[in-house]
Length: 313
Image (cartoon, rainbow, N blue to C red; front, side):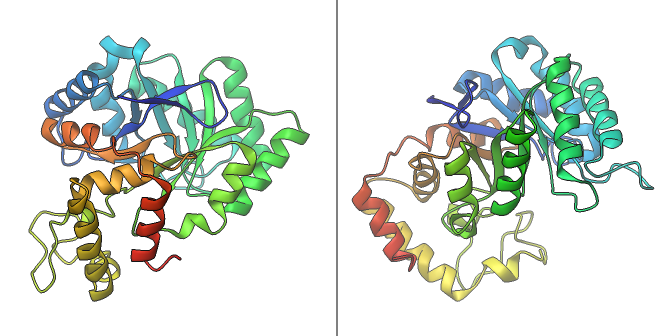
């Protein structure tokens, strides 16, 4: 397993991280331990969860599984999404974030969070209020590093400017959807994080499973999959143009002795601003597949050819 610094910080993370959104939902407590143990075996050290995953169950199920390994792993969690009724159960206000952090610490049975991320922007709260609350968390020792998720490029710039001018802790990471199929961050977000030294933590690296090749044109999406069962995302992803691209990408990978999944992970891992690729898993064999799929470091020529296939050049 390769380890990289998270942005310009000194915190090192495995180049493949585990997305823990399935824990407390599709994965029960016993299976959570099985998946976590496999991650440790494969050298995965970054465990990314959120209070909203399983309505707190993800953090609760993870707690006993990660406890024996706490010193050797990085726990990343998030807050902002609604955890209850009324105005005091969501957002990025000082009041809510302080409560949310204490609840996450309790559920995770730990004294500190390695990476505490704001899950979404909150237009109702001034950014300096949020950053001062996060800075206080860092100074208290309850949080080691802070990051953002689902921020636009301009919001990253605003947050970094506020932190620097007010001498507050700065975001070291940005977590956004990014994959061969979802290239929107390249327009504004990635130039911003490169300028200000944030590491990118891409989620949905397989575009909700589309880039595994399990979905085929003129065939119904397999039952139980993320894009099956009338998923609202299916219409956006399962279309003729994407299928045509998928066939070309599969051919590109096969000609070089790689699978489609290895292309999807390797393409992300070949980007210098990507610190860790966040991928979910419900079974140990998926963990192993994810962990071993990020080893392809693509040449500049290969990266250019992929862009040409996808009409980006």
